[in-house]
Image 1 (spheres, rainbow, N blue to C red):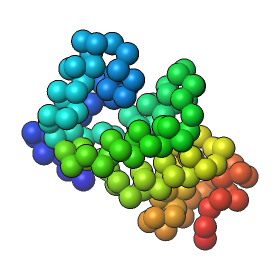
Image 2 (image 1 turned 135 degrees about the horizontal axis):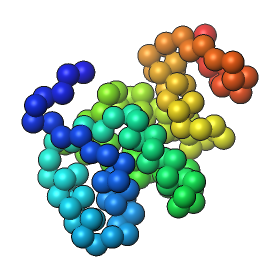
Image 3 (image 1 turned 120 degrees about the horizontal axis):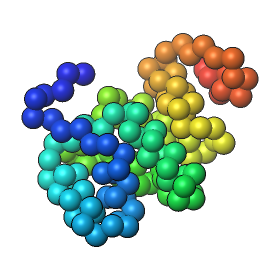
Amino acid sequence: MLLAKSMKIVDANILLRYLLNDHADHYEQAVGIIEGLNVYIPFEVFAEVVYVLEKLYNVPRGAVNVALRTLISYENISTYDKDVLEKALQIFHKKKIDFVDSLLLGYNHVKKYKVYSFDKGLNKLLIE
């Protein structure tokens, strides 16, 4: 996917301030960016957001799933492949695996990509 020159990329801090609303000034700025601009969010940023929400803020996986699925439903937000990301979020919510493994499973399930891993737990979840 090529990004248009007018496309804006946000980092994890912008998304976290938007989702958590824990700093008034930053939240208002994040709202303006996320709701007011065409925004591209790389998978790497989603991975960092998931990690921070889960490990530092103790947000349950179900709440992470709902928040990020809602966010990617915005028409002005794009990412590499929303179908893969949605599947990854669904898997992350249901399975006790890390988010990057959930992304790999998303590629495997949605795109039918062959994933190679020494991770026995991940290999059990992969489809041929």
